[in-house]
Amino acid sequence: MAKPSNRDKILAEGLRVVHAHGFAGSGVRDIVRAAGVPQGSFTNHFASKEAFGLEIIDLYLARGRDTMKATLLDDTQPPLARLAAYIDFQKDRQSQNGMRNGCLFGNFAAEASESCDSIRLRLVDVFGEVQTAMTYCLRAAVKAGELPADFDCEETAGFIVSSLQGANLLCKTHRDSAPIDRFKKVLFEKVLR
Amino acid sequence: MAKPSNRDKILAEGLRVVHAHGFAGSGVRDIVRAAGVPQGSFTNHFASKEAFGLEIIDLYLARGRDTMKATLLDDTQPPLARLAAYIDFQKDRQSQNGMRNGCLFGNFAAEASESCDSIRLRLVDVFGEVQTAMTYCLRAAVKAGELPADFDCEETAGFIVSSLQGANLLCKTHRDSAPIDRFKKVLFEKVLR
Image 1: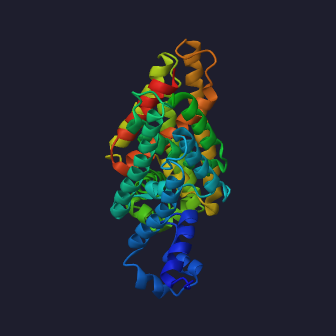
Image 2 (image 1 turned 120 degrees about the vertical axis):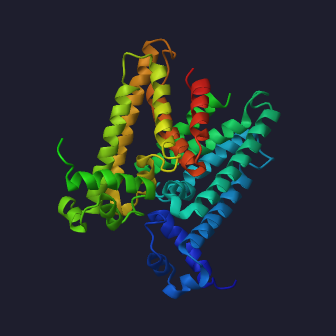
Image 3 (image 1 turned 135 degrees about the vertical axis):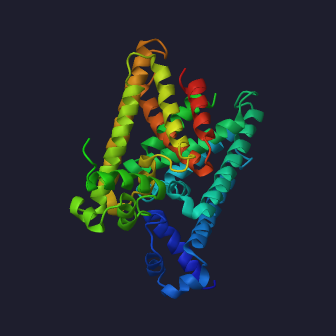
C-alpha cells in the first residue's frame, strides 16, 4: 500500500481537528501540526482554507454515502428498518467520541457566514443528497405497505433531515444520546404511521 | 436616558457580530471595532473572551424569555396557539436578516468544544429552560383538552426543542424558511394529536 501523501495526511487529520474544534476554531497551524507536515505543505496543496474546508466536507460525505448505501438505499432490507438503522448508525458514530463532536455538516452549517458562501452552498447539496436518499427509503416503505399510500415522503424526508441535525446538536451539548433516542421514538410512534 | 456605557456597547454590538460570524470567527478586534470603543475597553470589562461569550448568551436569553412569556407561558391564550405563535416568532425573527444567522444558541452549541466547557454547560441550562416552558405549554394543552390525557409532554417538549434547532440550522443553510414551515406542519398534523 502506498504511503499516504502529505495531502492525504492534511485531509485526514484536518477533518479530525475541524470536527473537534470547529472550522474557524482550527488554524492552519493546528492542522499541519496534527498532520505532522511542514506548514508550507498546506499552501502547496490547497488554494485557501475555504478550498480545504470543501475537501473535508467531501471526505466526510464519502463516509456518509457508505452509511446511506448500507442503510437507506439497501433494497434487500425492509424500508423502515433501514431508516431505523440509519439513525442508529448516526448515534453510534457520534457515541464513539462521547458525543463531543456532533455532525460535521451541522457544525459547518452553524458556522456558515457571508465570508464562506461556497461552503454554505456545498451544504445545500449535501443535505439535499441525504434528503433524496431518505425520500427513496420512505417511498420504498409506501410500496412495501409499511406506510399509507398517500404518505408525503418528500416532506417527511426533509423533516427527518432537519430534526436529526437538531438532535445531533443537542446530543453534542448534553454529551448524551437521549435527544437522538427521543427523536427516533417520536418519529416512529407518531410521524411514520 | 443614560448614554450606553462601553460595556453595554460591546455586549450589544458583540452579540450582533458573533451572531453573524460565529464565536471563534469573531475576534476581539472585530467586536471593539463594531462597538466603536478602544480595544483596552474589552479587557477592562471582560476577564476573557469566554466570559464575554457567557454574557452575550444571557443577553440573547433575556430576549428569548420575553418571547416565551408572550407565547408559551401566556395563560390568557389557548395553549397550542401559543406554541404555534412561539414557532412563528422564531421564524419571523430570523427572517429579519434573510435567515442568515440562525439561532445564537444553536450556533454556540455547534461550535462548543473542550476548550469552552463553561459555554456548553450554560447552553444545557438554556435549552433546559426552553424545554421547561414548552412542557408547561403542552401540559396546559392537556388540561384544556387540546391534547389527550396520556400525552407525554416532557418527551415531546424535548423533541420540539431539538427539532426546532435543526429547522433553524437548515433555514440558515438554505436562507429560506421552508424547514421551519415543514417542521411546524409535521408537528401539528402528526405529533400533536
